[in-house]
Image (cartoon, rainbow, N blue to C red):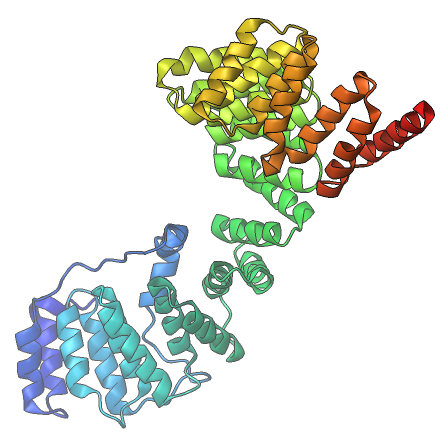
Length: 474
């Protein structure tokens, strides 16, 4: 077995200098011993598993031989040079680079340019390596291995279009390996072009069915196209293989939501929580699913877990969840959630969230049939903070109307009607107060204005009833 450092290097140089310029030996001698440690760094986290794969690394940097079907001819001298370079690899990278630099000419084989690129790449000099790979392809336009190397470097540098062109050319020339297909799929996916990404990932997975990156890339590609059944079945395999991976459980949950199967999505999110991998977002999503399924108790428990996961989080999302519970009949559950927010946030709650919380408390009190002065004071406090809070004005109007004070109710509804977002609703409420007093002529123009602003079928029917009642009075 040959060992290039102690003796063989000198003897090989002696042979080579018989057919090469004498300065070549001096150049090699000067370069000898200056070998940095090879390294391979990947810019994108999604590609790290690919670049760290020992099989991939070996296939990329190794193999300086010749494939005569898709590679240029190599002269006897060039072949001798390649043999010398092979003997220098991998310990004498600087010496190998110097030897190639002094030997490459316009008429030498493109394989030498490719080899020089490989040597530079192993020294983590991707830009120089890419330039020499391109030179190799220019010298021999059908050089399949050069296009593969160009594609791999361009992926690493984020030059997606150049990488796609290189991989496509390689495939046209009959090259097809899992890594090239997989990275081609990655490029298309990064460009949000998911149909070719799917096709490329399928080919990669066919050649490497155990590769998790290709299966996950394919899953994301079909998910982005709305092919939820395909995504769900692919994720079944991933979850069975890696049950501890939270991303797989979560992605499948969203896949089930896309398939209109919320209960299956809830099972996934509960499983995620059971293995200790749930997040604030996943638990809020779980609560929203239960709420949509009219399961307020389960929704409340999910929301409470979400808040407990990070008690320092801004209360806006919890308040919104409580509002959702209140709007769907979960009044008691909403009260529990509000109490939790007040207990956890205390005086640290911001002005905007404070107003929302006060209005929600007032609404919940009124929904329970109560309408005491404390509720009114809460709402008046909200209006002091923001005189244009239409929701608080509407609630105060409702409070006074229920308390048998229609004139005061009208005053608050009139103020709300000056706010565009509440104009239609406020006019309907004023009309209802007038109808209760038998003042049909006063109610009719308000209902017609409300319909002009925001047409609603229920208001249209109500308007017809008031018109008939008004005519009956005449």
